[in-house]
Image (cartoon, rainbow, N blue to C red):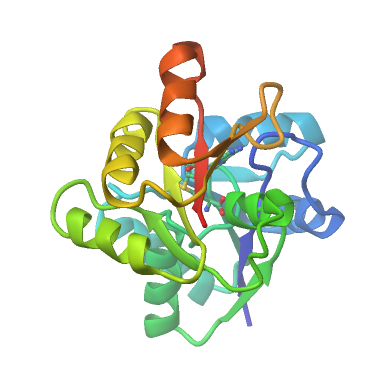
Length: 222
Ligand code: SAM
């Protein structure tokens, strides 16, 4: 029976990939990628010449039909996202749920990096329990969520983009001024950094360092 391998890939540093992930990416029939250009860089680095096709949030449903039909014809397939573990706040989970609903092929995780676990591993704020929110909603439910973060006894972790980090810090200043915010930026990359303090301290830091309002962010509110 064919297998769909859900493979974690680096979140920045190309060396952060498992030996098993590399072997399977070489062996499968096709690698479905969130962005084929991003995965091309990884494949070039490791001499992986396997065929690649895109699967992203805007892919038509015929793309899922195509994956299902390859699997039903007995071909092993890999799914990777641009960074980290497919299915955590990216389109991977849609493909997995469709394949699960429509076939009885094996769906096998090939674990590895995730921005979530990377941030938790160096947070040092006692995050043995936490609430993960993925990306915060832009409009509907946003205010309620900040009120919940303010009330929560558990650390809250979410992903944030450079376009919204300042707006989010503004909301944290308003809703939970006494919490501690830790912002991890560009984990595993050249300009990796960590800023921690009260919401207004962290907000002041980014106001003073506008060049650091870029890249990728994981935010922990504790
Ligand atoms: N599935 C991925 C994972 O497991 O890490 C996350 C995918 S989500 C579409 C992308 C978000 O993850 C970014 O907007 C950012 O918040 C976070 N992220 C990814 N790479 C990161 C990095 N190197 N440093 C900090 N955050 C990162």
